[in-house]
Amino acid sequence: MHQKLLRNSLFENLAYIGWEQRLALNTNAAKALQLYVSGHMTGKPHAVPLADLAHWMGYEGRIRDFRATLRQAMTEL
Image: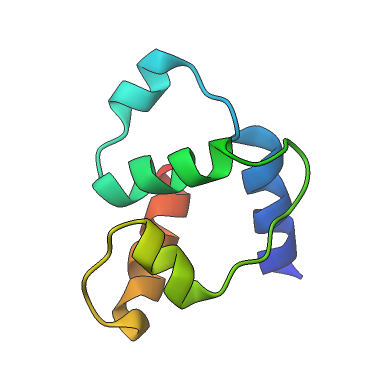
């Protein structure tokens, strides 16, 4: 349930952020995730395999380590 709420919040609230907010993001993962989310319709969750998301975000580590990176990026956003 928590993940569903987080996903909904991500697509509802982060699709479009101000440029100053974008510049304030500290990690490349948060920037890449925000860019990915901004390419989708606001308020519409989008399912994607974790490996595909890691590839699109330019993540080069192990997928099992990507989960922690993704959580960190979502927390930053």
